[in-house]
Length: 169
Ligand SMILES: [Zn+2]
Ligand SMILES: [Zn+2]
Ligand SMILES: [Zn+2]
Image 1 (cartoon, helix red, strand yellow):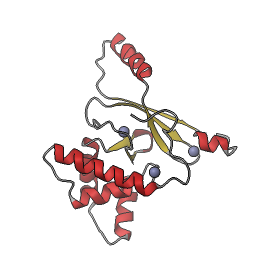
Image 2 (image 1 turned 135 degrees about the vertical axis):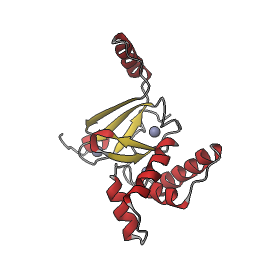
Image 3 (image 1 turned 90 degrees about the horizontal axis):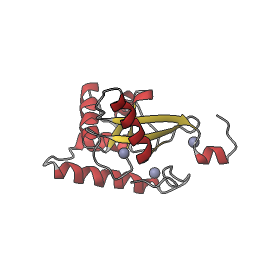
């Protein structure tokens, strides 16, 4: 799991390493499931992992088109679904967009539980683990007679790097 302190990437870090790590991990997850990280899925993941920001499906489509790969929207959505199922891409509900998982948890499809922090200034997305928050959520849900399965909490605000640079929300 990602430690709290380095949940957000350092500005100017070697992002090529993040991308290759995301691709390696995707390859491994698909292999474990007896599937292959097909070329289309690889390309889509490369675009989504291209930054630590969230990206919409149509932006992925446009970026691929700009590189000469013209796809039908349904193909992109299917590739994204497969990547989400593999746990290497997550959906950012509040923005109807997607972001690459740079953590080590592989279970994105079922039983997912994570806290997603979204910086309103630089648009960076980071995931953190917080067991107590999740237990409190579970307790609240069960108190309402509800059996929680997927727990994703999105929090919007200002990341440490933007705060350090004097930004105000
Ligand atoms: Zn990076
Ligand atoms: Zn993740
Ligand atoms: Zn920020």
